[in-house]
Amino acid sequence: MKKFRGIFGILTAPFDQNYDLDLEDVKRQVEFLIKGGVHGIVVPVNASEYWTLSDEERMNFVQTAAETNAGRLPIVAGVTSQSTKVSLLHTRHAREVGVDAVIAAPPVLPGCSPVQMREYYKRIAGEADGIPVMLQNHTPPFGIPMSAALCMDFVKTIDGVEFVKEETQYSSKMITELNELGKDVPTYRGTFGGKACRYLLDEHNRGAIGCMPACQVADVMAQVWNLLDAGRKEEAQTIFNAAEPQVTFEFGYGVVAYKTMLKRRGVIKTTNFRGCGMTELDEKAMEEFDRVYKLVEPYFCV
Image (cartoon, rainbow, N blue to C red; front, side):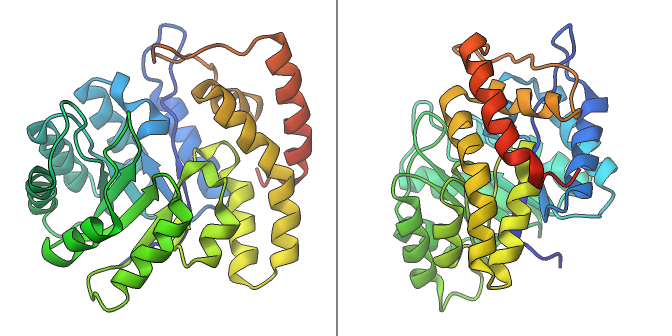
């Protein structure tokens, strides 16, 4: 069983000049993460614009990532959809191409009750057939917040549900609550943080087993994690301080911010995105990008 601990970088959906999924850039992102020393890979989830991809594109994305990774790191496949049937399709495919776990948030349209959530996760776990399932606990519009008690009830009662990715409001306190509720639950393997590693130091201190950020500076965050695990908190804080402005910038501009970083680092060729409501970086935003890039650049591993 592969170790699920540390920084698991989320691949972006790289698009070429025709806005088609660029599988060569998917491969480059995988190699970038492995060379950068991250601890795992995630694809395709919110940071991957999964909702803009066709089912065929999603499956090609996962298969390309899994084949490129070739078992070197644990890889987690996102199977969230608004249809249980479609989630089962992606779960089956993920299992067939050899991923190590799947992650899913509950369907948000039109919303579902705890009873419906249970059935959704039970069916995903059944289709996963031994591959661990991770609950993604997220705020709207990408999720329906679940209480710590409900998450742990699913872990206790659904065979195969073993992890939580926690990114609701007050997520750090939720990690403490989940770990307290799960301390005597044999099937509970831990909780990952999210939110781009914004609260990484707090999450680590509360017993998170890792964090799943978009991949543009995952190599830097992996260094922070390794130092925290080694008890070298002051060194971890120094590197985190250099990366934090980039994290704040990402929160302000979204997908295009981390695609711009990946392009600047030579990992992907374009910053093209499909999601409606997103925005290109204007001149002032690029000035800020250049500033935060210089702060974090000394800690790049690749």
